[in-house]
Image (cartoon, rainbow, N blue to C red; front, top):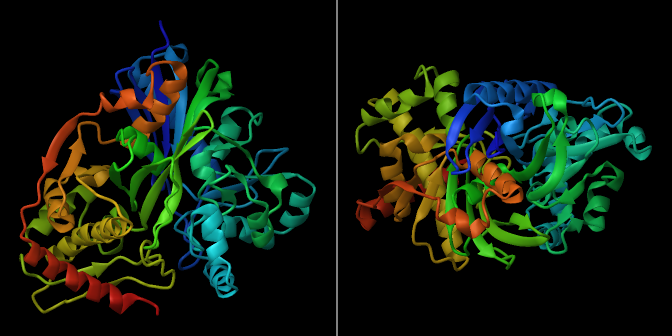
Length: 494
């Protein structure tokens, strides 16, 4: 059988998935396993990296079996991952020395405040495109070195390795032969110079991270490694890697400057392709690498929202208002149209454009007739309002936006997508294939395998499922959004 399929590994914050795609970019089979969350202290979030690896093996084997394919039918593997989450492991055993510290984790907030007070943020931003925040990987790495017994001494001996999740998976897939990270994930560490494409010595000194820990940085598409035969039954090349939001950008075929996508999963992340220009934001957006091919970097402006789908999980698991996440649509539909309730889901602080790690969530505007339906509606509205914040910041940086492409688990909710279009004042376009994160990883691998000739050719395979046009008048939209801004003001820490 010709090797015409791609296996995409999508290792996310709340689950690990594997999807088999054919050469037309169509999903053939998939498997998924939920990832347990570990909360050692308020504001701390961890994952068991060994559980991530076990789940990856399990879902890949299941997806391949469901597709009725042998490993020899695979032209390659693509990996996409939750970004900024880090693992430190022993090079000789491959075993993590601590749980993975998740991107949502806020334990290094005091360290970040100290760095900002010392006046380092301008230099950090100019070199990395990022802001100083616990969200990013660098201070997490420093925390592990400082708080795990013997870690600094082991790092000094060259005995430890560090990486984001795709890097850890690549190490395991290759049997410990390859320690590499792609440029998109490297650009999220606070340690990588996005302009010259290398680890930045000044940032390593600032955060006290030894260079010996770090992986090689590679393109998003290439001969990255070979998965050992024990993984799937035959050796399969790993040909593509990108962080989840960058992979979704590729999966949405946002390959021309000015195109924008927003992905709605645990959080929400909007990326605007800016081409070969690393645009410096004046509105506290991030400058990041969208993808790197043949050593050439394409940049993006990014707005990061920490809590989107996770707020619906909170309704389900924290408040018990719904039995399953899909129930939120029907519950919210019963809310009074003029309910006036706002949820600011700052459970782990606020992301762009506020970057307030100390902010905490709040429900505001409650009255005696507020109930579960109004709280559910406010939860979905918060996703729309936060997206508007990002869109307005991008416009403030000079972007001319014509439409917003959307993907992720939340976009199947038609009512939410219409509310989103009304709130941002833009057409919202939902593609036929909404699993664009995994699709992007498959595209990157397929480029190297020769299944697709170029990124531009991918645009021809993108198909529209439905476009949601704004229907609300501007005055009504602005009144609602003014209430949101007042709600945000009330939860800000300063």
